[in-house]
Image 1 (tube, rainbow, N blue to C red):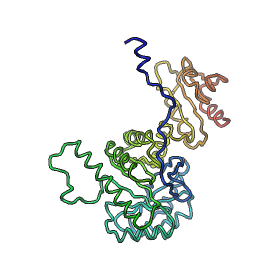
Image 2 (cartoon, rainbow, N blue to C red):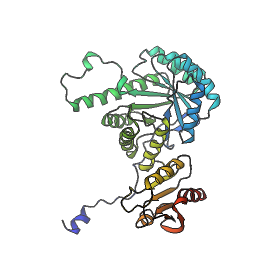
Image 3 (cartoon, rainbow, N blue to C red):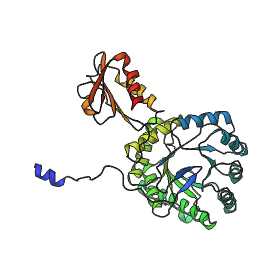
Image 4 (cartoon, rainbow, N blue to C red):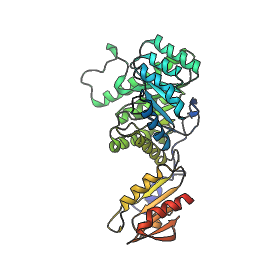
Length: 377
């Protein structure tokens, strides 16, 4: 292939970033706007039993500290639902009540001042009970999130069942259609009651099913979409699975709020969410760490330094790019777009801004000086 052929086949990208955001009808969870052109909102869910007010408040404060904007709490029974009122007194972040099976827990949570209720169409099937929740939510002027989940879809009638011996492709298509149908039926039920403060999620462990279901329902209704891969797993594989599913949709302009459902400390979910938003150029919040993968040229503990810097940056709200590079051979040049960076040498390191070295420090001072300079930015 000649250079001429390469030039003719090259696609010129005019702008780096996702497609324009899908337009959606805004709702407010507390004071947080979701949809309607608002920045994509990051949320998580407490792992504590909601009746343990002290532990739940502590975890909510930890989530707030790293940037979480909405928190969901479990309402398995009336004891948990009644605890919401006391929790609300001690936190500022909006709370979503997670409701399953017993609609009365939603009514209690609403009475306790919760900011939103999540209903699962698969396990509250009595329309009278759903209407009771809708009436209470309308009176309290709070939204309802319809939470469709692959593992708890409404039951099938005989005619709708998957044919025996169906292959994986057909099974995947069948699952997508079931998820979309469940979501649209619940939307229609709420709309029949004159209720439109709705957001919806369609979650599955299968990334293809999650992506395709959200693509389809996004074309059928105007409400904000909450994105997530359900039961994604422990932090490392779960973060990757979430990044693929959520990231793909965000790059298509789909999604108004996100959660990474990880088996671990929910604080890690927030870190992963913001990394996905930064990687897709959907939202920049807080600092970005650039770090080289290390190699035989490195004469400092690059991995240890980068890990330490990342931990400190979690609580910093500045929108800056900070680089940790292993050597001075390429470090400043490779990270010249960073607002601030460090590149190590034998017992020494250079500090640079936008590729220009302005300070040399001893190895023992690297971390402290870098953080000192970061605070000055």
